[in-house]
Length: 434
Image 1 (cartoon, rainbow, N blue to C red):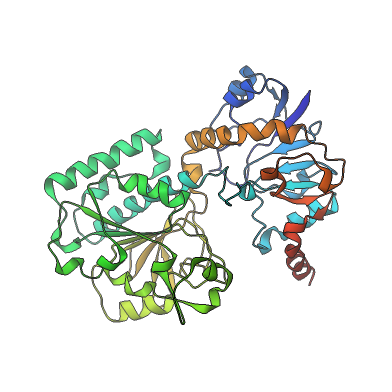
Image 2 (image 1 turned 135 degrees about the vertical axis):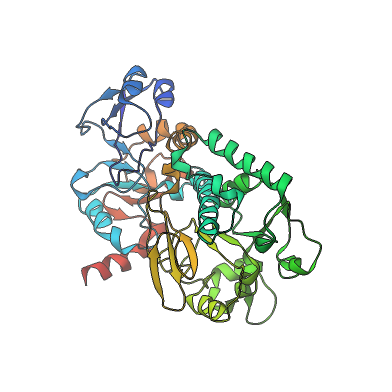
């Protein structure tokens, strides 16, 4: 019988997720599961035991280990296969020692982030839950900020995602706020209220799922600037979704999506023109430093120096790339202290809601605020691949390994060497040596 280990998560006290839930353990009868005990995991040790798993501290009898987040260096063992979010594919500097250790021990590394279909669509992800939690928390942050400004508003009734016992209860709270807006309307001073969502993938879909619980009217990017001068409604929130062609423009010629992906230097950001009209912005885009930024410090400084009112009170930076698409995201935050105010005039940040500037929500691990539901969804998607990974012959050459193509494409390291698709990471390992 094949053996699978499930590592407990210990990156921080908020990480309560698991890659495989008890229900899937019970259903995968041909696999023997060994689960590390955990006091904080969303599913109790007893639930795993009742599903047939063995609960024990040491799981070194397993050749394949599943986890969610990064793994400490002293946990890795020679020749074993590890499946988790490694956060190495961008050459993330802080995780290069971990990648190097995996290679030194001649291990295999499979990264969930790269498990995709033939159209490069991710198959196993927490993104929707990042969007769900991120949007709830952004609405909460808006309510607190307006309250701080002395503006009574219905969003002040919304709490942080992690304080709700379930996603359903959080949604019901948002619906209640929506009914209030529909009946009583929003204060004139904060209307028209426009929420921009950058991106249209799984994270964006989660965010849209939450804001759709409010009385929403959809507008196009072209309508953003003129809405103030039209017959807008105080009993609605306006939502606009931005795609790449809305965010950037070519230096010459027409916009072409694949050309932008391949040659981003040929494009400039045009996002500044929307910012003065947005009440809130949710950033749900994939970003790398080869791409233009969405919101720059320079533009925010110009905006605030001009004393522009009623604009961009809150940014929900779900993607949370430090000094990335949202340049003023200077640090990642935790659920209990999730926001800071960035003052563009001083280039300083202050934790909380007080002060001149824009409130930034920058929790880098939002799905952990919905640990049970997000784990169940993730585990359900992962289930069909677990037996295939568990039964794979990792002793043969990479070319001959009998993994399905979706998983094989996600193998970053095999027998301690970078696989062909990830050879580019060598340069980041070399930089680490220097």
